[in-house]
Image (tube, rainbow, N blue to C red; front, side, top):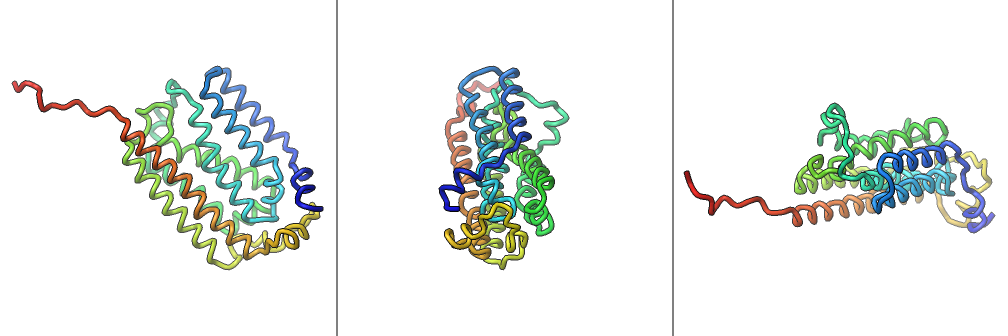
Length: 260
């Protein structure tokens, strides 16, 4: 098998992922109707399907740690952000949920999504078991949605102040960089399931021979993916917060008000 054959043939058929995407689109359209914002929802569901059904999913299921890391970025950062940007300002959550979604909890959710699922026992389990991988997918989407809520909530009143958002995102970038550096420079001990993959698809020779992807190099690339591209996502969001701060209407001046 060559690379072109792999990319053409190794798509993962997942009726559950397809059903979830269709349900999400139908619920969104019934609740909010069609508008230009709906394009964000289409992008979110398309990204979701590509993440779980493209050859990337085949590689992430026990073959390449770097492929797993790409999935991680999509599920934790990109897909939840796209889905939240699709919501109109009229969208609301209950007061009970709003109280739970405070900045400290939401930031901790983003941190947990990065760190907890890279504990060796959980990382290995997700690489070797489809059921654990499904749980990982659901939790990453939920944790990512909670994290982004503070800066991408539908209504401006539901978001934290722009400069607070800069600090919120910068702290997440630092935590992400720390884990990325650990993964890049540590031996292959974080997720040992990728050391000796069960070659059920017959692509081990393609990965090792044609691509030259050895386990140490694979983990280094995975660490760099978490270190650099993930921080680029945070950096883009930081620029968005600065633009939001710069574009905010000035507070009314009290200099010329008559004194009592």
